[in-house]
Structure formats: structure tokens, C-alpha cells
Amino acid sequence: MSDENSVICSAKGCRDAAVWVLAWNNPKLHTPERRKTWLACDEHREHLSQFLGVRGFLKDVVPLAEWQRQEG
Image (cartoon, rainbow, N blue to C red):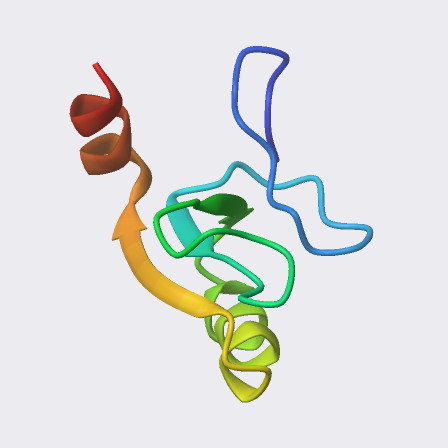
């Protein structure tokens, strides 16, 4: 379970701490370089990736700690 300082998984109803960042964009709405993000716990990473992937939206999946380092 997560505490008040953790980042929460984006899966509906999940309150677990996120450990993955799923970077995506909808090419009909966003410029190619734009990245929206969903966060995922280990349990929901695959499900959320598949949801975005079948729509052609998923661009990258990276560990949250790596994403945070890249973002500065």
C-alpha cells in the first residue's frame, strides 16, 4: 500500500505506489514530441501498456526513478 508521499498507480481503483512511467501520446491530438504519462505499479504495468499499445499510443515504458532523473 502507498503512503501520502508516494506516487500512485493510474489504474482505476489502484492505490499502490507507482514504479513505472508509461509515456504516450495520441497522434490525432498531440504533436509527435509531446508525451503524456500514466503511472503504473508492477501489477498493472502490462495491462496499462497493452491498453495504450493496441491504440498505437504507447511510446516508452521506463522505471519511475529513471524518469525522475531524466526530468531533473
